[in-house]
Image (cartoon, rainbow, N blue to C red; front, top):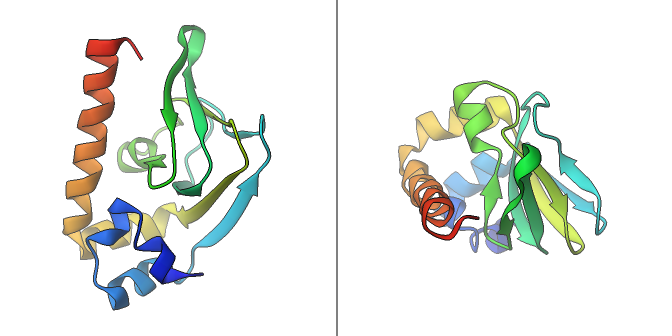
Length: 136
């Protein structure tokens, strides 16, 4: 895993290189083809997804598309923090490469490196703001 390239992801950028290596030690990369479903709404949450490249659309129930994710974004944190099923379906729009971090590793990393919560909160607030003010 290229931990230096992962430093471009805001969630990991707050960590020192050694800490980033620790968080990524059990992570793996996966690439999805355009149109491929990455996660389905309601499915059990087992991983956090960090987007290295590509774009994905986020769909919720009958509402349809509610957002777009791009390189540097992440998803899956809410289901892992609250320990419930996925709150949305995520579909690759272009070839999408993600770093996958297991639920247990994510929770342990967040406890050990609480500074990771700051970029996470900023992203969650931005998502809420977009939905409230722009309808997506």
